Length: 449
Image (cartoon, rainbow, N blue to C red; front, side, top):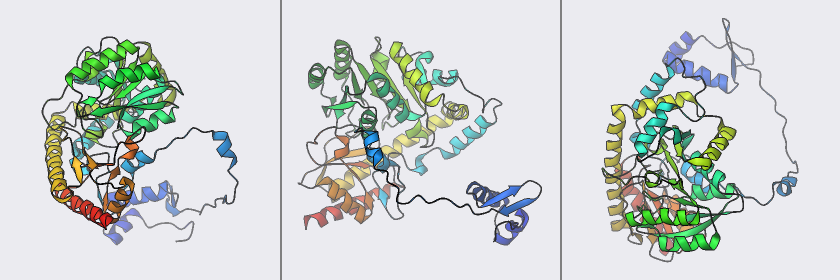
């Protein structure tokens, strides 16, 4: 249709295309958003004039290399969690549960209720709705008060805030080895220097932690005590006490990332470290995003004293506040009976899928050794028994139609071997895990030729 021509009426479009009025309304709204059509109240919808854009080709942008300096911000490892999956490909590289495992109906109901509140679109308190702060403090337990809870735009944002507030540019940040690539990326983007401390089946090696603190004179440690990503380990009870003692001795902070708080495969999980911390050494991060929905970017950051004040100031500078309607919707969701039903269902599904993937790999791809079976979380950490380049294997798997995460991005320094992280949460059903294992086995056979 030429520019300026009037579109048929909505009633005519419904009749012509046998579509519902809602579908037609959404289609027109999308065309308006894309600038293809314009609406004139009382007059109709018209084809818009095409926009001409000046083409910028051949510009010399090399000056930016010098201006930006040598600081590198690398989000490649995070993008692998977030990029869409091609049809026919099975992803064992995802960072979120599959859409079928999320409480979509309950979330929609919560959003509708939140949107009907008269103050849903007004500015919330800077640090969070008091009722949501109270809910998080009860979830964490211990002596954490509602006033110590800062509501954030998801766990990644909270973790980044904590690192930037506690670690000066150029200073060391102790991290588990291996660890979550998003923490390494956030640390490097803040100018911090990640220093690895090895982990084993019982979590971080506290016998090496104190030595590393003394050697580096670091003032912060990033730690995942519960269902560690990627190994799945849970910090041993005696080591929990040791971590707090060592941090106190070093006058250091512990950034506790409790990303998997709601992803346990069993009924009970250990309390967070911050519930046992009375001296303000622990800065605690958690999130609803993994268990609720990727687009529910809502988490909490808990701290005490001047460190907490610095984090809150940085939060205001960066974000002002978390949108009120999002906080209201989260509160509606987590205080409803449906939330606990959802968590019970999610727990059972994750446990079943873990068992299916573990058994399939043991049968079809024995070259991948899962040395530790996690009791929570969404993935297996598999060691390659044979001398195989993990990046080449990941590419071979992609050609076979299955996405996996190579292990090297999980290490702050040289990895001690070749690993794959395999997520069992992002597939449509457990049957996909069997097919994915077959494809991984085919990739391994292809590389052996």
